[in-house]
Image 1 (cartoon, rainbow, N blue to C red):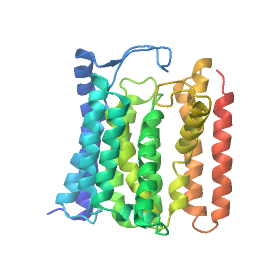
Image 2 (image 1 turned 30 degrees about the vertical axis):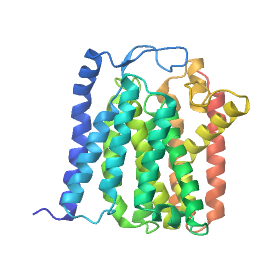
Image 3 (image 1 turned 90 degrees about the vertical axis):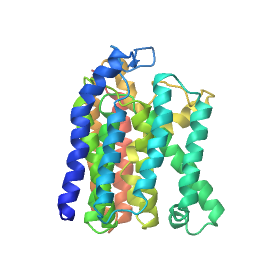
Length: 333
């Protein structure tokens, strides 16, 4: 019988190869069925590209987590339930990728999914916000979780973006666990998600041969939101916010600006900070390298500074996020 480390190695290996080998097959199928993201005025690409590569990511995560669960490794007890909920969101998101689903229906499905997750495990909310009554904690945590799901989708707009952010969040949280800030049981499932994202990045890095689609970004937002909320419950709320800080800032600032002038926040656009350089001919990989640099600084601050000098971690995070947003708004070819 495999020992724990052997089982974890099998899980992440299976997860990686499902994506790295499955995406080219999936790409041909999607192209033959006409499931393409065709360029338009709001697009950041110039040629029709297959959309729906997130199917491979979801399958890889389900397979990897199932191996971990069957192996009896010390993983979060509810990981399979949360993975099943993510798969359900993936199904409605796939329908949206192929046929189009109204924003209202998608939002209702997200509310139901998050509501069911919190009903089955209200501790997600009450541990994150223990100073509030149960109903208040559930409402606030539920709203925040749904927002994170959608911002993960909103930010999936250029080659390599969501895959890179997924690797950054998984890597940062694994380091938080290895340094003792978070519990060790989150490491195996985060490793499964992270290596799946790495496999997808091989095909999605600029110039992208396939796009993730809502079928990938929505479930990933749900899953990673769950890990973030559990980090809140472990008392690591500041580090849990700093690591995805760039994603949170770019999406929230942009959507608030659109809301203030009455623009529909749920419709596609090209107003995020990371999208601004595209209009000036800046390659996607050049934008991504700046974001990767910012994410590394955020991870360093969250993992090694925040637990000791929280104020220093906050200063570095604010400076890093402000710097990368300003840099992207000024970036030219």
